[in-house]
Length: 454
Image (cartoon, rainbow, N blue to C red; front, side, top):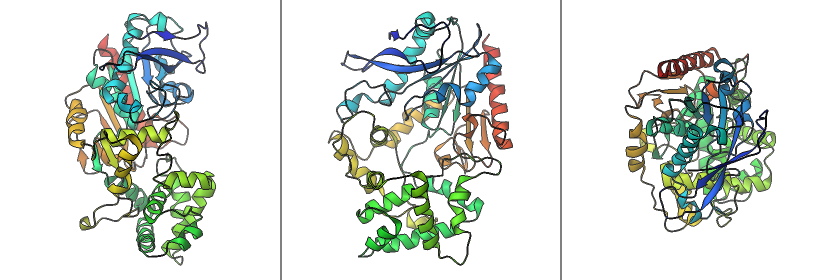
């Protein structure tokens, strides 16, 4: 059982760091421990209220996860305690001293979920030792999460129903594919809705013609890119081309429209030239340095840099060993438009797995086994509310795909016109009506779960 360590305060503040002692490996031979960070916001909590828990997943923990998300607003209506627990190997929560392949072997889904289960078990058994305010041992727990964190939320309800009463799982990337060409098709639907999909795809074709030629230096110089290989350049451009794809869509504001499709609005400008303008503008607006571009594109960058705090390195390990989801162009025989270079193929990503993490990493990752365990666990699980945006770039990895639902559940809602995890973002006046509707439905589910558990 873990033990919390934190400074006691009469009036808790979400900026106060709390720490919970976890085993390095819940199921192995390493009996060492580490400190897992968590934050608490008790602003709206009243005795008898539920616990709203989340994890930032593949990003470091910050105060916004307990005071600037929709669950933190919903807490006011439901008298809830808001808690966010950092994921192992991200931010300040590190079971091991580095991010080498050997150290990352304890980064497994089972260990991740057991971390949260241990935390919730301690919260139930000895809440006074975990929280800075009195909380009932019988407090009901609702797990919120979006994107990969939505996976965690759904898995926690499915695997630990005695600890987690219900889960709100937004844009969760639950169904794994080794080569996820469907990812870009989600982006294509967004571009198509804005009227620039065809021109964007034509530009990619023109870029590939150059990248497969003998001289790519003029293109790199024109775009302000470092002198990388053709394949690395194709991969870098793939990342730059979708920089705004995860941005929320509001009434009168769509960053994909203003930062991508706007460059293709002039029909007299060749698609490749419009694309060049778009890429250069994106680099400037995002303030990406030459070193940053090299880091994004060079597949050999930081191969043996095992220092903690590298979010991308930890996520890469998860892709290599858990679920793949390598973002590639579609196979030519499918006749689908492409929105990234064909050079950013499986070899571009997968070749780095053993180079970064050692020969013990098995390639390709077995996504069939992953789905058989971690997707099938959701079949028949109750009290999970699934949402996704119709324009979400990850839509076809969620249970609410563009071609139909992958699970049989009545607790689902596709948010028309929305992008990634919009329903769990902080509510604003210019939110889409469909986002407001998704939240209303989610509120009803959470209220019902709490009511029926009494």
